[in-house]
Image 1 (cartoon, rainbow over the protein chains, first blue to last red):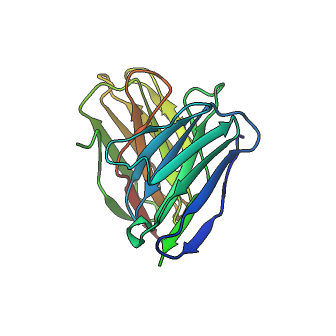
Image 2 (tube, rainbow over the protein chains, first blue to last red):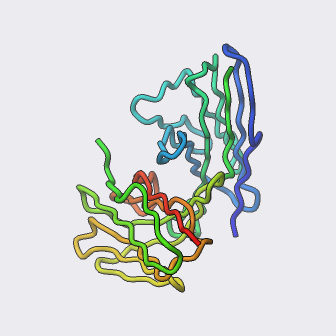
Amino acid sequence: GAVVSQHPSWVICKSGTSVKIECRSLDFQATTMFWYRQFPKQSLMLMATSNEGSKATYEQGVEKDKFLINHASLTLSTLTVTSAHPEDSSFYICSAELAGAPGEQFFGPGTRLTVL
Amino acid sequence: GQQVMQIPQYQHVQEGEDFTTYCNSSTTLSNIQWYKQRPGGHPVFLIQLVKSGEVKKQKRLTFQFGEAKKNSSLHITATQTTDVGTYFCAGRRGSTLGRLYFGRGTQLTVWP
């Protein structure tokens, strides 16, 4: 089946620094990738939809300048949390759609971000 | 506001008992998907329903899509400890691709 990887799986950083999270589709090309945020025991909150070669579409309430998304190729999308603060600590998950599969989204393993 | 409502939020059952989680949307959905997330893991796709009134089975799991395509349910018969996790429904409006509107999930605990 289609595999999506994320790197790093966990990261601890100091307040004010920036953190980059990578999402890769390993065995398929993904024209669309999605970035979610999940708080403990809560649902997935869609942050943005990332389309290869174009600007990401952000959900209402998500700061574009704080959460920078780059989808430079059909297999890689990156999320950069800029000037991170403790309230940015969360579980960030990406997913990708496989064009041939009827709408199924394949999720990466997630990245646990802790901002001190 | 929340697009897809899911209940219950938590369910604790004895192994062998049945379990059902329900999803309801205020708008008609083009399709609905179900995902399972194990503790500490990421969501894993279970199934997609597209047709009005559709019923699909996967071993002990039965998925239904309502006639009006606004609600759906997941029923597990004779739960096992391996069924532990959070079950999410996620619906789409309009296109069969694009963003999913996730329910808040039902966290299932199974006691041996």
